[in-house]
Image 1: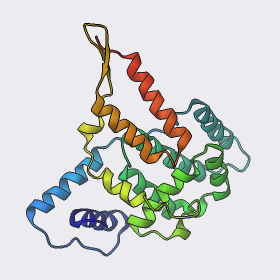
Image 2: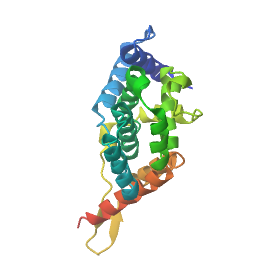
Image 3: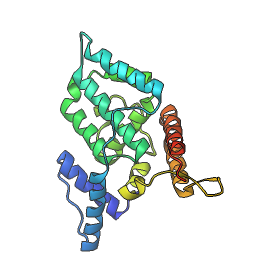
Image 4: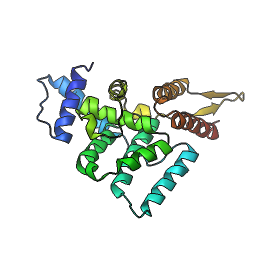
Length: 233
């Protein structure tokens, strides 16, 4: 269940981004400032890139996009929607759930959804093994932005933990997310790492493993290998 701050953040977001006739509840200046700070953190969070951590799936993604651009029945709107979903996955893997990215997905569905070929979308999501994490994104729109399930054809069922994980993301700040996972070599030759960052990366991966197992494992080991390659003495 959402607390007062969380509830009013999403009231404000729905009103500002989806033009609902909602108004925040009366509150103290302290709570207003707290909401403003969280909103700023959301805006400061970098957007995800259109890429997958697994090299095989990323190669497949590039082929999907290239083939579609040259297809007789090219659907640019479908490609754009796929890019938004992929960028949101990248953000989830690298930082946390991007509220900006979820809102972008919702706006695109409502403004261009009638031009999207959802048969193609389903095929691509299946090829890339990201059906469930796409469904996870759609579930956030349903649970927190009052979308109807009929507005999001790639959602077969609502992911129950989508709301909880999104609310947890509100508490993350950019400074924490940018803290590097580095290994360091001591004067005695032993390799040490930042256990706090290691635990956070591991817990983060476990949260999303069920939604995109291949991508989650690939991303974790990609970060691990990158950290090892930059051992500091």
